[in-house]
Length: 377
Image 1 (spheres, rainbow, N blue to C red):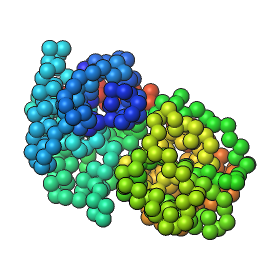
Image 2: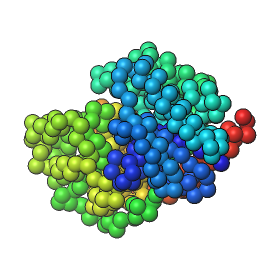
Image 3: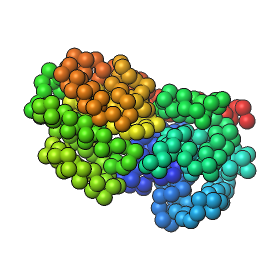
Image 4: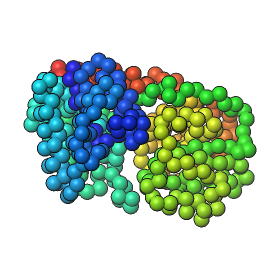
């Protein structure tokens, strides 16, 4: 089968930095059995082509300007990039990862070229958080584009039941296909769940940005400290907020209990999961949250806000609390720290699910949907 995977970015030629690991794992597996071409819409400044994990990446070069003009130019560049590969035959299917811009541009190009398009929604396509300017349901132009993409796609996939239940997908045929991980990168850690601190180690793996809601997490941490627990929070992720989170930690008086490690590549994360007692997610929205799978693979339980995998998994494979409630998050963390047998049960159940739905499983599921889409066409 000839597959065109359309992405915004995350496929750096290094295969290590500026990448989306779950995308790389999917690309690698599909390329073992199919002719895979990846079209990147917003990664390198200038157009380029290079091999990656058995596939060929065609970066169309960054496009700037107003939204309408930008989409028009991206559509033209994607169509041209697809046309440049025509000597090797037509594509059987295009698979757009995320709705904007990949899904919007791909469905338009696919319709013109007669290629069925599968769209995976895996970000903020279906939500509106006005106060932090997040989500594609905030503005009418984006709502319209998202609705058209859902309507025109041959199939829609999401990674969680949490996403599948959202209103913009009402009436659409939706397949739930988690973006599984390479579990070998996150081996089970040997941790004595009966042993605590000092200190208890909490872990948050996520970029420092508004939707990840670090203020909620830091306020929960302050509450835990006031309860008398000796805890330390490790934060792993790029800082996109210019030090605002670190400043808040100082203002709350918890900066001595937090270490900001900055960006770390995927192969460095297992060590952080291995030494943590609880993995924490504080996001206001998650379509899925692959870090929950990474933590589970190592045998680490997650406490988090009711979104993505955490919403799907509670109460057996994770502990969910309301979005934006630092007191509930703190209380849930403390309760789990004080209950090692429950912590172990949750971690074991989460790990079993993650292994059963790993990157190999994900590739097979997408291959099944590709074949169905092609057969229907």
